Image (cartoon, rainbow, N blue to C red; front, side, top):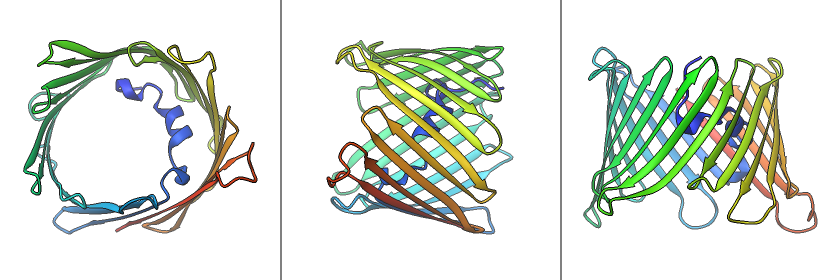
Length: 283
């Protein structure tokens, strides 16, 4: 198995606990299409029923022989975003991203460079913000026989100071993964596991403790059940008694519907419950 990035050491459990629970976004709409010349379009919209609806229209062109990908987006905040990607062009295993942003209303500009380097037993990343700071965030993971060890650090060039540091260890196998992370300058500790029980059932849990806060440990448990090849259901609950349910179904090729809700099981009579939905159209 390939070595994951530092932020993905606990990805299987994090995805099980957080992904496809649609109550976190009150309403989302996504439409995808691809032109005959290979240009793909993606229109996204999101409304949390608080404030303005946000969205963006995105166009992406990829040239496989050269490893070049160009993405341009225009958001409802009137931001013009451009991303240029070079994959395995400069060196084998190296992916380079150059991102720029321009806000015409304020003449604000942004420029970032991201580097991703992957080898069979090594995964490293570096993120540079050229105009703010400048700042650099780097992380690296080493892997051997399923065992993983990684670290992350942030640096502000103008202040000549380390801004953050984290560490993690983990183990990954085809049927399960486990990980322990120490983030926020080694002050927030998390332990998680993920288990693919069989082709239909997945289970996972995560415990978190903030050494700068109380002695209470946060706990979340989740499970996913594939009902049939086109649909699945998910459920989770945490130590505060907040339970969430989700349902995802492929209505027809290219059309996916997601429904979700969360309930405060300790205050069922109060208006603390949430519902959400998601539509994805892809052609």
